[in-house]
Length: 326
Image (tube, rainbow, N blue to C red; front, side, top):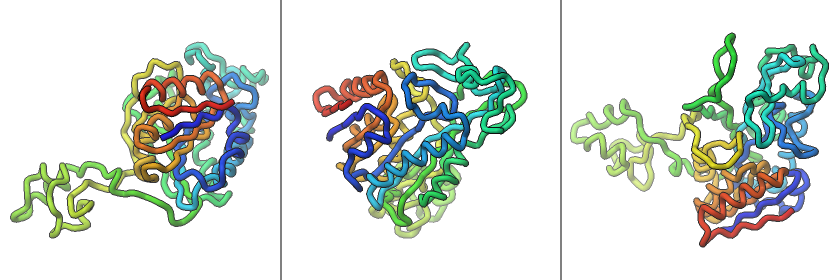
């Protein structure tokens, strides 16, 4: 399997890829007004939500061209708050620096105190993920699911008048009404109630047999999920309870590897090509390589491009085929 890391703006680098060459996309774009990656032309520091959403839709028009007709796209996108001068809630994390003491985005741009974010008063949740999904739908994409990534360990927030944010959206999008989807590859363990209900039937096998997928399912076909006549768990749910993963790398926006693992297993086959137009520290490409898929990642910041190369190479130094092009 090969991994290509294309350093540069995703809009320019995607134009170099062949049409309909990618099966699955798993990515997390920069969030609106939350991080400064220290590179000119970066997406995320636009003045208004509308400008930010327009920039993302432009990127995904390029993604649409390279995506196969039966391909699937997963986009992890968090929300942010309207900031007002130096008193807003949105605090910017600068590249290589912790968030403590960081400026607000409004301060970083030099906005005068009292300036609203896109005309939206301070303290408002901007609903960026919802705006993105509606804009993508308007652009012709099929919005197939909103998955809630529920975090077992949320980022601390110094707020006293609202709950701490502890989940983010993952949008599942397709360019066609019919697409590749391997339901069995990502089945979840059956609930204890489901196991107890079926194992209580006369002559039914022990509950552990259902949990482990070891029992032929002739009398219960279609109830617990079938894969070659075996019980194989429940259909994948649209909430994923996942915790952070330890990392030695200085990247403050990496999602856990279980997110791309589920997406890639469900929406691609071994040997397919996986794309991440906002590669960051390289988690999507790393997981794709581990699962026997080819990977392509675009990364604007050279520091992160090198970080991704290092992570993937170190994961399998004898077998990794990682190419970096600027």
